[in-house]
Length: 227
Ligand SMILES: [Mg+2]
Image (cartoon, rainbow, N blue to C red):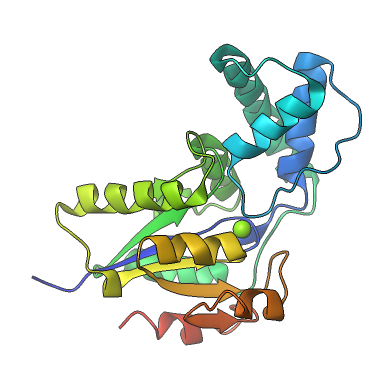
């Protein structure tokens, strides 16, 4: 059977900087739907799932964490997100368009997402840059608080799509936070870390990724890994 690389990309800080659009859209949803507008503090965003972030925000504002209220929040968030993406400084990071388009064309690569974003907000962010059709599978932050569980879901989605098991040596996780490195380890993948997000080289080095890049401005140095 032919070799198949499964390459799972994180979104924020790895492929793009949303320029705070995600956080602003969440705050807009809380303000318009729930009247919650006190400044948020003490809630980390990077590397976490949207489900976990939403839970913290609900706790912060004393909102009832029921499925209905979560859905109400999400619906409003999805309305505000494209507006904030369009009006803010959202940017694709160096080399990403070339890397993603090049991998999407390869028949020996299955391109997927491994992100803390809700499935729909992940699509909205990629759509903003016209890359939403490049990723055929994914693990998302809708149901899980723990990124390791998102990683397991992504692998399952890839294996279901391909109809076979993927050997660990052909599994790749690319991300910008210690959580990305850790969840890559949890599924036995090769881990590529990049310092274009919130974490500096020493922080990521300490997690022991297999490969560490300052950025992907030279796409071929990353693409050369998937042989
Ligand atoms: Mg990230």
